[in-house]
Structures are given as structure tokens and as C-alpha cells.
Length: 387
Image 1 (tube, rainbow, N blue to C red):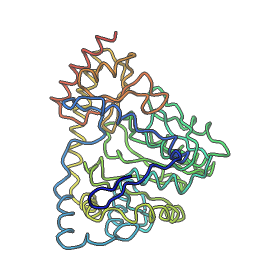
Image 2 (image 1 turned 30 degrees about the vertical axis):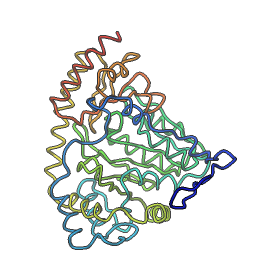
Image 3 (image 1 turned 180 degrees about the vertical axis):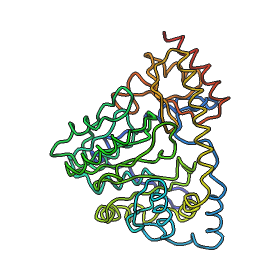
Image 4 (image 1 turned 60 degrees about the vertical axis):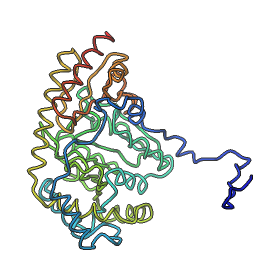
């Protein structure tokens, strides 16, 4: 190959095909991302799992102060700053009635990394991970990346996860099961009785319950309870992303028993070293500062939910009432999601979240009411077109 004027010589294409790991070959680009790319630039985006509120001022200021004082110029402890982990422990005492040792907390690059740590530290090749179907897209993918076998379990008619179905799916090869409440993509909230059962199942069968609690503060009806209140074999995943509208800051955490945290730290220290230092100080300020901003956001989501449900009901679409998060998952006719997307409104086909999501669509109402009403007009037109 001829070199260029500065002497650079390009690399030759190897004579053999590139070989990739079987694990990565089992994972594809998220169906959510495919929908985004298919939509027009001017489309109303009801597919995004992201609050549309600004990060609270006191959280931003926490990062600014830390940057200006030079606190963010170096690595923090692998687990995160002591002050952040103390703030996380205080949060669990305040909101969950849990006695969490700050030493049993790892600050992570968002809740996604926390899920990854749990999988990598507990799943051997071929072992099974049980999770809800429809469920968050990462559960299947992270199980495969860890070399595990995805074991999806269908939801009840109200879109909650049945503890009896989880227990029936457990085999000698089961390493863990995932619970998400309030849930993505359904908005369902598990009952306290369900959470107690999940803890019992984990303890009696000696498997790990991974409790994804990133939407825990966004509850309209019912109450959020953590299975960690009721048992030992639980790893709690949480983040500032949804509660404080801090998705871009990438700051989450995981807490569990000391032995489990030590194993997950072994993974974290090599794949991440530590979470972003500015984000850690922002998260500490968010967790420790005024919480009225969260209440205001939840009230706005509740109003939007009701507007969306009224509109979907007027179209004759059966929609289980979401009790939390900011998603609804109506049952829709064939071709409905495509017809809506053709009208420049992004929704996500239910099958993106698992086989049992087919016949549904996920709608995020993380937009203002005026935009939501505009989107409902397009949905109404799409519903009429496919019936």
C-alpha cells in the first residue's frame, strides 16, 4: 500500500475474517435505539427513558464546588468517596428503613454498570438468570455478556411479576433473578407482599435477588418496598438518573452483603476504577439536599399519566394503570406502533422488551402536557388507520 506524504502507511486487511466472542454475537443493538433511528428529526419522542426536568440546582452546584476546589482532579476510592457512600446509606435509612454500612456500597457509572457488576460477579457460564418479560432490555443482554442463560418469565395480566412464577422457574442452574419496581417498561409497582416473597425465594433457594430500584421515588399509588428489608440474598441497584433527572451524570450504586460487595468490587476496579468524581459530588448534594424537587417532578408525572390514560382509553386501548415510573404499556392492534411512528411520534414496540411484550407498546410520558396531547392526536389517527 502506498504511503501518504507524511510517511504513514495504512494497515493491511488481514486475510482471515474477524472472530468475535460468542457472548457479544448474541447481543444486538437495542430495539429502542432502532426505533429512534427510524424516526424523523422533528418527531415527538415518547420512547426515551429520561425525565425532561433539569438536574436540581443544588446537585449541579455540588459538582461545580468540587471542581473549583480541585477535589475532582484525581481518582476517588474504588467504591466512591466516603461522603457519597454515607449519603447513600443515609438515603436508605430515610427512604427504606435499611441499615446500610457505607463500606457495603459501590458508586457506579449509572445503574447500568451496577447491573453489570451483579451479573459478572454471580453468574457462571451457562447459569440461568430469571427476569421479567416484558422487562428492561439490559437484563437479557447483560446475562448473555456474563455468559449466562436468559430465562424470561411472563408477567401477570396487571403487568406485575408473580413470585410463584419466579419460584417455578428456578432450577439447580439458577444464579439470580431480577425484580424491577416500579418497572421499566410497564410502570407496575410490586406489592409489599410480593417483595417479601421475592426475599424468601432468594433465601430458601440460595440464589441472588437483584432488585432494580432506580424508579423507587416515582410512585403514584401503592408503595415501594425493597426485598432487602426482608432477606439477605439481595443486591439493590439504584441511581440518581431518574429520581433527580441526572441521566447524563452516570451515577448509580449497588449495595449488598459484605462478601457480595467485595466480589463486585473486583469487577468494578478493573472495568471502571471509580465513578466520575464530579458526578459523585453532584449525587451527594442531590441525595443530601432538598427533596421537594423530587415531589414536584412526581406530581407532574402523575398529571401526565392521567392525560395519557384518558387519551388511550378514549381510543379503546386497554392499558393497565401504571402505578409508578413514567411509562404506560397499552395493548395495541397489529401495526399500531409503526403507524404511530409514521406520524412522527416515537413509541417503542413491546417486543423490544421480550417475547411477551408483543401486542403492546411502551409509551414514555416524560414530556410536557401540551406535547403529550399533540402526540395523542397522532395516536388517535394511527388507531383509526389500523382498525
